[in-house]
Image (tube, rainbow, N blue to C red; front, side):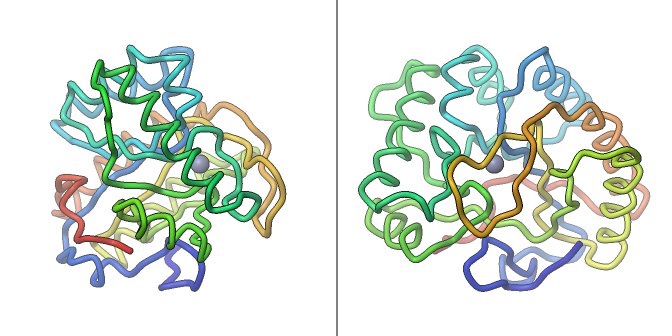
Length: 233
Ligand SMILES: [Zn+2]
């Protein structure tokens, strides 16, 4: 599904991000996932020579630091996706800034780097509140936006087919963009005007990604580096 420039959200138009037709960026949220799922995803991306953006949750990085290291070693982009995946609308600006710091600290510890500071932040639930914008500006971070969302956070029978169809249709229409998929569905903690999602595994992820890669190639598009986006807000 393609939504253009929704106020208060991280949805953008690919042309506003400087992406030309045929340029695609893949991003994966809410990991690193357990049960070897992220490693299997990395194997698949490596096989195709694709570098992706991984919007990681600090709490999961603490649980799986070795997976975080492998993401970085593979040349993928690590994006701060908060420490606890709390809705930004439920936090004061100070608490939000502290949460971002804590995620960076978890990544830094996993990578063995003191004072690690991520350039990019993607807020939980895609909520770009004024508080998020102020914290980003104050701390010198950039928003990592999305252009296409395949509604993969709602697990129900037949979801794999629906996600794949949505991705294929978007690609045909846009031929460019920042696509988001979830490695695992993390609950959005606390309240806010966001759909409530059930936490859970995403068993459809690998076949969906495999099909999407084939479709990108079939349509003559290419995967581009995940850090080539211009400075955000
Ligand atoms: Zn998330």
